[in-house]
Image (cartoon, rainbow, N blue to C red; front, side, top):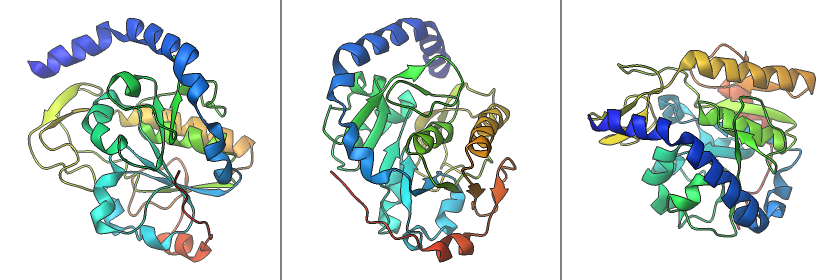
Length: 264
């Protein structure tokens, strides 16, 4: 019952929340963004790091690229000394669940306006972005960015904003175990089988994925990158996504692109 109530509230309040977001962004948050903190990451090879179980088989500390982590990527910190340069999060449930970490990390965060009124404090390492109503790929996130239906699409738009030399994907398994209708909200009462940590959504609410919808968005990324001659390679270990060219994780490690992790 609680899941149904949450879903009804989410859908019925969308337009008022969108109006509120636009006002807060235009009058307050847009002016405080320090876009210069992203400057060191422009025109680099970029690693987009998903949250699938395959991440436990991915030697992140041996991949030396500018990296964009997502959502609760901090749950992997006790397993590796690797840290992302940027963390992207867009989902309201995840923003609420992970706000304690977001409020103390010095890692650059790129978050939607709703994060502010969900409890994430405005700080110099946070860039707040305005979500668009469309499902287009936006390569200038200072204006707006599409939420899509997956944070990976959101992260890939950030990579295009940074004018990536190449986009390299790990941890995007594109394979979920669940019962129910896509986009519905459910509480996960068991250890999480769909992410790198069994605690990722355990005893918490999550929105069920729509893989067909995600693939449509990934194809937008592919078309954009093909047109702009940006190579995109999916190095996910045993990943199910078939949109992008596949690559061996060993080849990614051998690229050994040197880049110093920066925090602010």
